[in-house]
Image 1 (tube, chains in turn blue, yellow):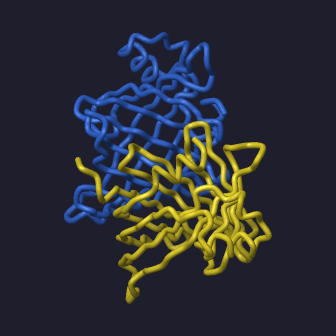
Image 2 (cartoon, rainbow over the protein chains, first blue to last red):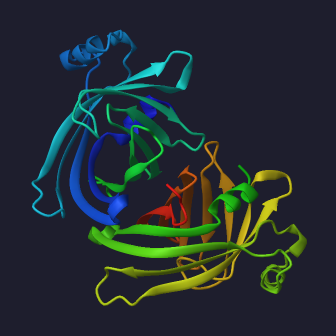
Length: 177
Length: 177
């Protein structure tokens, strides 16, 4: 699977159930959210601006997309969780199974970030994003066209300690069966 | 990674945080449990009996082990969750990356079951177990020697519908750091 096929399969509206495990405290957090993933034209000004910010040729971008989410956590006094993020894949010209992923805000810290992705032999998308004080490792895979799973780990920047492990099961909202 | 190395890395006591997503109802279940994984001698009578029940040569068994767990769910009125299970890997003689896994009780249904396992190129252990009315798909991988993740999916026997998706983060209890 290449990034183009993966993004195509991801386009749509998803109902997400996410559990975050805060490992140090054995604490559980539950989040229900709606996620929308939409293709963005490669020549959209936002794509070109993000590529230029990273000094990447915008012509190298493949299947840029926007992810938007809105949800509610059971965490005490939490406000609604809402956000949007532009993601621009830049495949490795020598290996279609891997590449860079530019994003205009990150997951672990709210700043722009550049991650490295690759696909395993069973089609799992693996994304590793270093941040200033932490790193994030995400795995996303499809169970069938209408169900996907996502595991996200936030590690301390030293890299050995896992701080949070979270799991999302995502169901396509427009599924007909 | 072969099954012997995987079992060796798994031996020990683990503190598990498990979240189950019951997808039809967007219901979250949280389970905290202690898991013990211990090697069993290949010539232990329980191993030989399980092999014989499946008409498998006991000499083909590699790294049999016992998994025991005790935990508590936040599910209403739930009793303590406690169990033990003998697991006997039978590697494929022609492919060390895959094989059968015999168990004396199953996960989705409390009966003996035989699953098919394989390792992906990034060392993830994948186990698929058919049951009478459902099938279970498990993925287990190590983040580091003291943290492992497990994703379990229970599907209807028709195979297309996912009923429950659950995620465990498991931390080694005897870790020194």
